[in-house]
Picture 1 (cartoon, rainbow, N blue to C red):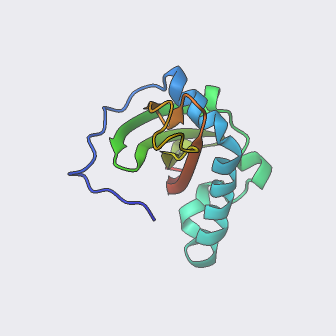
Picture 2 (picture 1 turned 135 degrees about the horizontal axis):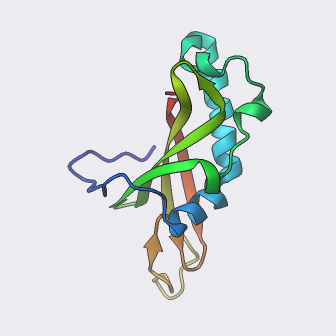
Length: 146
C-alpha cells in the first residue's frame, strides 16, 4: 500500500473541481462506485452504523451519482509515487435531518507507462492523468455519508 505523511505532501486548498479533476475521476468512475459498494459491505459486517444513513438504499441508489454533478470538492498534492487527490462526492439519495450525504475518496494516480529509451516520453502529470493517458489508480473510501 502506498502511503505518505503530512510532511511529505503539500496539498492545495480544498476547491471546486477543475476540468482536469473531473476528467481524472470520470476515467475511474466505475472503480470508485465499486469501492463504495465494497466499503459498505465490509463495514456492515462489523460496524453497520458507518453506512446507517444509506442503509435503506439499494446499491443502484447508493451509486447513482455523476462526477460532473456530484463531485463537489477536491484537493491534491504531488507525492513521489504520483499524485494524490481527495474528492468529496455527494450521494444524492441521502438527504435527511442531518442534511446531504457525502463520501470522501482518496485517489492515487500513478504514471507507469511503457518506457521508451529509459524515460517516459510525456513526463507530465496533472491530477493523475498523464498526457499519454497511462493512468493507474488506487482508491480508498475513507469517510462515508457524513
